[in-house]
Structure formats: structure tokens, C-alpha cells
Length: 258
Image 1: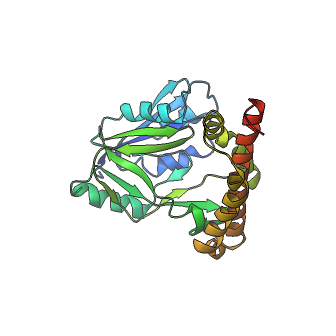
Image 2: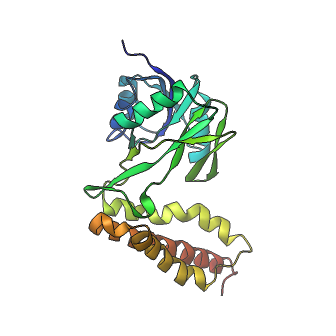
Image 3: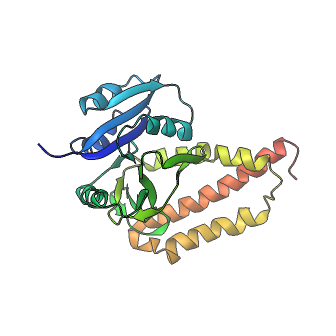
């Protein structure tokens, strides 16, 4: 029987029956436990699928990404915790590297690794989407999720080592689904900026979106990712424009804009 690594995989999930199986299958054979905090209103079969892969499932009311992820992490009992999303997968190379570093952590309290995204038929290896380094493996008790929902980040007490093998990411099923995320994902930022004293001047509406495209497509070599690289750079530019336009709109509605 294969020896399991002292890792609790900690996941949060909504209705993800169509894709969470890949994430669970990529870790179920070699970690000590899998913890899934599932939204209380989910009824698409996600719970049954998670249990089939040996996961311990707890249903909770949705509290936001940060609070939900901290809840999942608090339930992990192993020496190390691995944060995994339903649209991600740990490949053989990353698994082997994790096994190697856990045998000798060298004083590190956590480890980061690049995230490699699959988009419209190809792996994106340049631009703003790669290496997209994430800190997801940490010693229990040494990390906490922070940030502004839905943009969570792991804050670690101690040194963070860097792994080289990528975490595979399958975030967008279609261009239409990705576009639908733009406005909702800006809500927290817009609310905070609209209530602040910071300027939302023309620089943010004109220069910043243009710079985002130039940086991603030319300086970070997004053009090497074909038409997908061009579209990602253009979409990031549009998302930036939309974010600051929404801030101005919100301020006008509050009587603060011009």
C-alpha cells in the first residue's frame, strides 16, 4: 500500500459536480485526508462525488471566499495543508516535488508553485496568466487566508519556499463564462474605492488599461500564446477599464463623482 503524505487537502465548493472529480482524483491516492466545505444549498451531486473520493464533507452557509477557506483549513488535521480549488489538478510532477520537499522542508513554513491555466484549447505559458505563482502548501497553524473577496491570499508566518512544477488550472469553460465574471469579480474593489478618498482620475481609465495590454502581450510575451494570448491581454485590459469605470459610476450614484 502506498504511503500517504502528511497532508490535508482543504477545499471549498459550490455546485461543482461537473469538474471537482478531476481535482479530487489528483490527490485522493496519496494524501492523508481531504476536507471539503460545501455550500449548504448545493444539490447537484457534488457531496456524493466528494465522498466517493474519500473526502470529509461539511455543509456550511456561504461566508465569502476568505472565511470559507479559513473554515476548511481549520478542519485539517495533518501536519501540512494543501489548498485546492475545484477547477485545479495536481499533476505527477508537482506531486513528486511536494513529496521531495516535505521529506526535508529546510525551515520553510510554506511553499508556492506556479499555476498553469488551460484556455480555449492550449496551456497559457506567458503574459499575465503565467507563472501566476500561488502559495497553497503550508504547515498547519502557520498560514491564514486574507484578502478582499473573491481575491483571497494566503498569509504565512515564516519562510516560503518555491517549487517549480505547476498546478494545473481549468478555470474557464468558455469565453462567455469568463466575460460573465468580470463585473461580479470587481464588486469588492468597486465598493471599497467608491467609499474612499482616493482619486479615480483619467489615468486609471485611459493609461492603465492600455498599459495592461502592452505589458501582457509584449513585455510578458503573451504573443507567444497565439490568438488566445492576444485575447487574454485584451480582456485583461477591458477588465481594468471596466473596474475603474464602475468606480466612477458608483461615486456618481453617491453624489461624489463629476
